[in-house]
Amino acid sequence: MAAGRSSRFGGNKLLTGYKGLSLFRRALDAVPAETLDRIVVVTRFPEIQARAEAMGFDVAWNSCPEKGISYTIRLGLMHMREMGAVLFMVCDQPMLKRSSVSAAVEHYREHPDRIVCVSYGGQRGNPCIFPSKYYLQLNALTGDEGGGVVIRKHEEDLLLFELSDISELKDIDHMSDVEEMEFS
Image 1 (cartoon, rainbow, N blue to C red):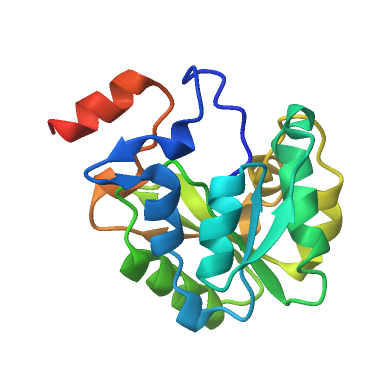
Image 2: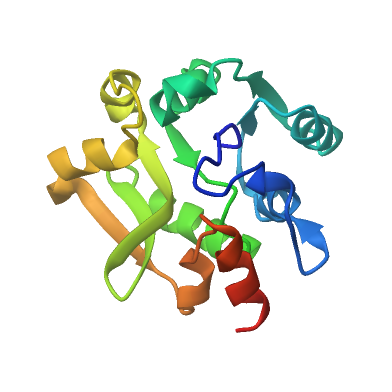
């Protein structure tokens, strides 16, 4: 998911550099393409579209980011209808490792009827994987409602995949977050 407005950041945070690479590039590099059947990047930025396509990923164009994250989710799901599950990743976790995402995918495959989210210390984070039985509910989200709304309705189906490093879950919301990560 790379279509947000970055309103708290004050500009397009996905183009912001972190240790030599933009946030969106770090996110695309963290996608374990070899373990997934299809990858769709939902964006509204030509730079991200070009890089995603160069990596062999499909792109869904979001021309209405003001409709919120729910619209981004719907656009992604439109391209994944026939898939048995969908993994949602955000682009503002620069320390998320490809190996961690791949391990979460393998964990989901061992529990294909469960919602699987990465976590640290029992705190749920992103990415999250939803089986297809939740697609209708994900499609029904509105505004800035995200997958957490569906998870809260089905907590009995939630399975956390524990990461060994909390830094992988740290996200960038403000420019000060980038500066803080640079020096941590």
